[in-house]
Image 1 (cartoon, helix red, strand yellow):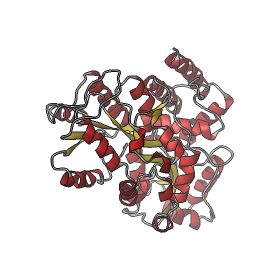
Image 2 (cartoon, helix red, strand yellow):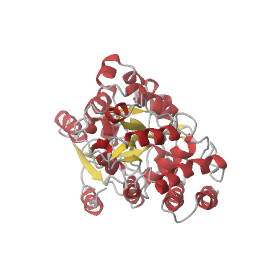
Image 3 (cartoon, helix red, strand yellow):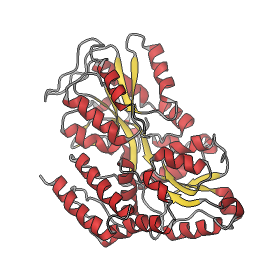
Image 4 (tube, helix red, strand yellow):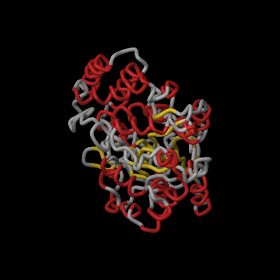
Length: 427
């Protein structure tokens, strides 16, 4: 359920491979025909490191109720690129060590096209009660290949106490307003040494997300519905100029070039940042920190008004080469149920896929960010939904990082990126 960096990848992968022999036969194939979803017994759940501490308790509930079909949690690194690499390695070696995969929502097309995951029976899951943009991330062509376990929309976290004291009445809706508000806050004695803003700018999937959000929030697009790239444009340049210029003028601190989600969250919680772009999971953790009740969230700002988040979230899929697929389907239904996604919302502020949870008055009373989060998800723009996603995100990270670090101008980086993306998506 999480996407948040550890160096334990090799050890975890090895531990996962030791599980290959576990479980009864049935279901694993890799053949072109429809999967049978047969076989019951132990399975594995493979996801990024659980920084919220909420996944294992949920698995314990399942294991107590299904002692002959227990689930072992295989935690991969917090870096999504490392997660994807290990999942692909498992698929290419046709290992049955991984059963249920927690996929970043943007990986569905790639994994389905390569037949690394099975097409799922749609009638098994209450898709009609989920937000439509979220369900679409689980589809490839005319089939369902995964089930949404969570959604995600980027949010602007901001220090309410400092903005109020600086005379800023409301959160910014544009980049210029954010910069102006930050300048006022930094005049306060208690804000000395604070930086204005940060997101995720290390060379990994988070950089792709932040780049796409900047481009979309400036009126541009990374790829169109057919997968054709459009990054060598004035709109895309305005988006990348905002990020690169913010590093140059100090709006974004230099150290943020190394930030992943957790780095930014910790910087915000420790009083180093006035504004932070992050996912909703950070809300619950920040409420347990020294800035409890001193922050709030708003939609991401853009060039001329509210911006657009990249559509995030995680979908659960069944590895084509897994065993015990009947158990796997039941487990996915369990994890993606409205009841359990509500629990993840309550315990870890993980964005749920179900529309009703965003409109629940009791929940809004306890989690006032829900209306903002719903708006973020509904306004979100998917990252490029292309089969060659690995090549696409790698090119985006390479060229964006070059611009942010000053190795290239924004214009040159975007020209080079346009060429790289055209090559990546070419038939």
